[in-house]
Image (cartoon, rainbow, N blue to C red; front, side):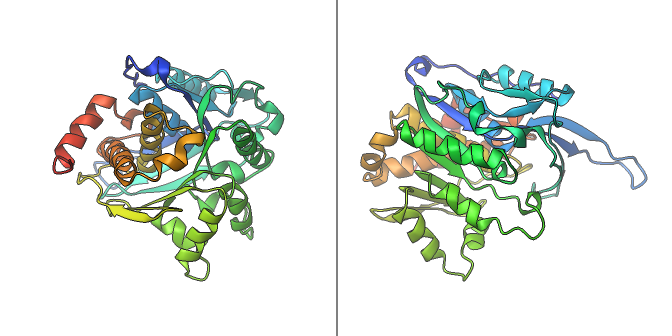
Length: 344
């Protein structure tokens, strides 16, 4: 069993709004190196799940974070709940169920830190979260509500995802979505795009990996995808490409900046760390939904937020695991100084 990491706290934490992350928490079983071809393969248990990782990233940096979702009433659900709490994430809106088990993912990592997954889901407890399971006060005082697409792969969680996004919007909360697409989680023969678009069109901030932008551009027209997003609710679209440049788009313009240069050993939670860093930075700067448009008119502010987010992601890929890979604020500030000292 891996040891959960505890977050750093800051004197500004009490002034920051809560980042609410909704969706799946699951167990990542990481394959360990074997000494010889005939040595039995072993796996080490780590806490994970994209929105849960984002919540831990936010908490480790020093902002209040809340995880909302369903966990199985089993030993793995117990471990996840304990790990979230140990990382400083609030869990008072977590639902426990004995109708399905906590999801599992077996992860293999190659020599460049890239990973491949084998999921044991569905059935899974996280997919049983219902729209009515949201507490009445879930969105009170929230600075952002964050989701990924894995909660769209089954009911009632898919309906709950869309319901939660709309309730957040109605409450004036910034809505964030990282597509984080895992095609193998969708039923065979089902085209995820219509449901993905229903969620994307409810988000103020959209984060895509480069291959996800290509996936959405069915006819190869990536610009059409960006236009559709920005003509809807989205006000800021960020496209990452591993160690490649980060591209950003809003209704006022677009830009590009380089990613930090690090040696990756495990990219499992890279995107989640990036998003956690971005939401933390916005919260620390006091950027709520009502202030986002003003923020997005300042190119320097945009690039400062992205440099911060990229540094959180860069540190995470130099460490193993998901929860355990999330850095504290001091580590991020040091990497920013090292990597971007040429930026005034």
